[in-house]
Structure formats: C-alpha cells, structure tokens
Amino acid sequence: MTYLAVPISGADTNSATEQIKAAKTAGAQILELRTDYLKDLTTDSLCRLLESAKATSLPIIVTCRDSAQGGKNDHPQQLRTAILVEALNAGADYIDCEYDNFLKPQIKEQLLNALSQQKTTRLILSAHNFDAPFRDLKDLCDDILQTCPDAIPKLVYTASHINDCFPAFDLLNEKTEDIIVFCMAQPGFISRIITKKLGGFLTFASLDDGSATAPGQITIRQLKELYRFDHIDKDTKLFGVIASPIAHSLSPDIFNVSFDHQDSNSLYLPLLIEGQAQQFNEFIENITSRPWLNFGGFSVTIPHKTNALDYVEKHGEFLEPLAAEIGAVNTLKVGLTGRVSGYNTDYAGALDALTSTMSIKKHKLHKVDIAVLGAGGVARAVVAALTDVGAKLTIYNRTEKKAQSLAEEFNCKYAPLDRAQSLDARVIVNCTSIGMYPNIDDTPLPPQALKPEMFVFDTVYNPVETTLLKDAAAAGAKTITGAQMFLRQAMAQYKIFTGKEPDEQIMEKTITNRLTP
Ligand code: NAP
Image (cartoon, rainbow, N blue to C red; front, top):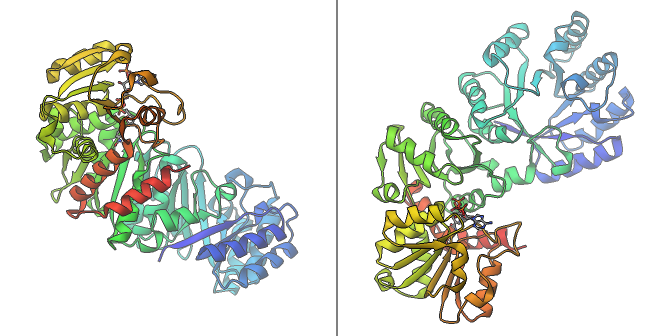
C-alpha cells in the first residue's frame, strides 16, 4: 500500500487541529504532523496535537524538521529531539528524523533508546536535497538501511528536469523494503504520483495550494479526482502529454475522465519536457529502457512535434505516412517491442471539425476557396488536410517567408498576413495563436473582413469563443471552434492508445467545463 499522506502545517494547535479534521474528510490515509510549523512548540502542544490526530484513527507521523532541511521555524536541536522522543512515548506510529542528525551519537542514542521501549513506532530517516538530485541515491538508501535496518529511508530531491526523476523510479522498482522516494519542483511532479505504481511507502498531498509544505506538492483533491490515486496499482498503464509549458493542458482532464468512464486501469500525466531534441530523446529513451514503467503512449505538443517526428524516423518502429507528409508527430504509441510509432491526429481533427459543422462530406471541399492564417505547426496539419481534399488554399502569415515555403511544399498560394484583411474566401481557418489566452481581445482579422456566407474556424481553443469567432457570429457567419478540433484529435489519440472509441459526450463536457470561465 502507498499511503496518501497529508502534512499538517498549522502555525498553532487550533489551526493545525482544523487541518487534521479537513485532511480526514478529504481522504488522507496518514497524517504528518509538521511540528516545526508550530510557533510555540513545546511537548505539551505536541501532545494536544497528537490527541486531535488520534481522534481520526489515522496513522500518524511526527516530524520536527531541521530548518537546514526545509523546517519552517528554527527550533533548537535539543527541542526537536525531545519532541520526537515525546511523540514516541505518546504513541505516534512514525517519527521522522533527518539522517544527518541521526548520525550524531547523542541523538542516535536518545532515539534508539526510546524506540527500544516503544516497539510499535517506526523510524523514518530522511534526507533532502533542495538543489539537485543526490549524487548516488542508491548508496544513500543502502547506507540508511545498513545504519538502521528497521528504518524507512525517505529520500527527496529537487528535479531540475523530468529526466531527473528516473533514478527515483529505478530505486523504487529495485527495493522491496519500505522506502519513500520522490522529487520536488514542477519537473518532479510525476514522481509524486508514479510512486504509488512502484510501491513507494507514501506520497504527500496538500490540503490546498496554500498549505503545501514542499515545492511541487499536489493537492489531495487533484491527486484523487484528476489523477485517480485510488485506482493506481502496479499494473496501471501510463500515458501522458509531452509539452512545455504544460500547466494549462486540458489533456490530463479529458483522458483521465475517459479512462475512469471506461473503467480502464490507465493514468494520463502531464509531462513537462523542457529543452530541445536532446532532452526529448533522453526522455523517450528513459521510458523505452524501462518497460516496467508501462508507458503506452504520448500526446505531443509545443515544442516537440518535430522532435517526435525526427525521433521516430531515426529510432521508431512505424511512422504514419500522413505524419511524415505533415512534418509533425502529435501522437506516439509505445509498441510491444518497446519502440515507438508516430502518428498525427491534428489532420483528422481539423478536417472532421470542419466537415461536420459544414454538414458536408470531405470531397465537397474540392475547389472551395479557403484562407489559412498562419504557417506554424497547426497550419501544416490543416494545409495538408485541405490540399488532400483538393481545396484552393491561400496561406497568409506574418512572416511571409514561412507562408511561401509552406505554400510551395503543398502547391498553394500565399500572402502576407495584412493582406488577409481584404480576402475573399468561403472558409477562413485561423492557425495563428492570435486571440489565445491571455490576449483574448486580439484577433487576426478586422470585423469588416467577415461575411455572412463564410465559415470561420478558429483553431485557438482557449478561450472557446475567441474574438474572431464572436465577430464572425455577429457578421452572420457560421463558426467552428478550436475545441471541436481539439476534441476530435484527442478522440483519435485515445483510439490509437487503447484501440477503443472514447465517449465523445464525456470528453466534450470535460473540455467545456474546463474552458468555461
Ligand atoms: P506555432 O507553430 O508557434 O505557430 C504560430 C503561428 O502564429 C505562426 O504562424 C506565427 O506567425 C503566428 N503568430 C503568432 N503570434 C502572432 C502575432 N502576434 N501576429 C501574427 N501572427 C502571429 O504554433 P501552433 O502549434 O501552430 O499553434 C497555433 C495555435 O493553434 C495555438 O493557439 C494553439 O493553441 C492552437 N492549437 C489548436 C489545436 C486544436 O486541437 N484546436 C491543436 C494545436 C494547436 P510567424 O510565423 O510570423 O511567427
């Protein structure tokens, strides 16, 4: 079992007691009393807090963290040791002492003496590195177990890149003893969840954003509702979206809701991959060389779609010809051999969104005049899809050279973006990021460019109703939202990942709920 631990970090016993009650209600499975947060820390205040915590019947860890290792208040070592001994005597299930401090003979002797008299309490020996990964995580873990074989080693370090998480996963995978290992900071976020799959002793979640006690700590609600904590076990299949930045991605919501709906033992994670091709390639190698992590596939977005294409071309199993034509891979599937295959679902997503709103079959777009605004990644998929069905395209872009090169590749016309103000087309597709949150009042075209007989499709999906779409609707034009394309490309990804059709309504509702202010 991997406990879901909630740190109790009130500055006084009253607020800490309120947190204890809230943690129990929210579904905590173990409480960590961070007594170093108490301003007036005494053995009496500890005992009052312990009484409140015992009323929940949850297991209790008592920690009095040294300020050098992230403790809140600078309580003297003597008091901190006295607190741990008192906690032991008062029946705490676990006490947590910094390994460095435990190695000091006086502290070691006091704690081991107390532990020998209170056999139901276990010792957690912890080490934190707030700057970087430990140089040799496994050696440190072995040292702790050699020094105190009954202790639970707790090793926590800051990941400056997601690739720093893999030593933690290796240690969890290798050890059969109870150990606690995870990474701090946003790049280490996934380690707080994956630890359950790999049998870590516990993971921490905060009551809310304001009560986190370490960088990158997730809230208990997110962990249970969005990341399906209660369903994770050693057989859980993992998926995720590779992006940078990642914070506002909708994909974890829609995939996890769909997995839940289909009762699938799968979990979808946000995978922040900073850097360029080298870091991307390292990440994929890290995954494919660890089949026991059981990653099944990835959605890929900014800025890694071409990195994904290059990777599959050089090391992959299969590259969908369409993805090669578009020049971008937005979906990777990990095959049984451990090698990845690349696909592009933006193409189908854009075409489906367009034809279903226009209530036409694809071939009816043949010879239709379409203006594509933008020449970036999404524009490539849209241009490939629309030229394949024989539409007459003109690409308008701020950087004219990029419009020219895309137009030459797909044999269509091009012009600078400012010429779009006087365009004459049946369909307009905005593939620029103009109007995207937070610049929601921006629009790529003035209202007078929009006519009632037009279909206006904005691939921007945050917000759903962009200024361009509002202006188009006001002009009497039909509108197609980026959310419709996003939904369809995600549905196609779900099918590639699982072989099953997702429930469209559930995915759509989740997107709408997330994007509605
Ligand atoms: P990208 O490769 O970075 O391309 C951005 C495009 O926007 C380029 O053509 C760029 O022109 C243009 N642009 C950006 N800022 C501009 C400005 N201030 N004025 C004029 N042109 C500007 O990005 P992408 O991957 O194609 O994504 C573009 C949009 O599509 C994003 O908003 C994204 O959220 C959306 N999207 C939607 C879906 C969906 O499923 N609905 C999927 C993926 C992406 P230059 O060439 O001159 O820089």
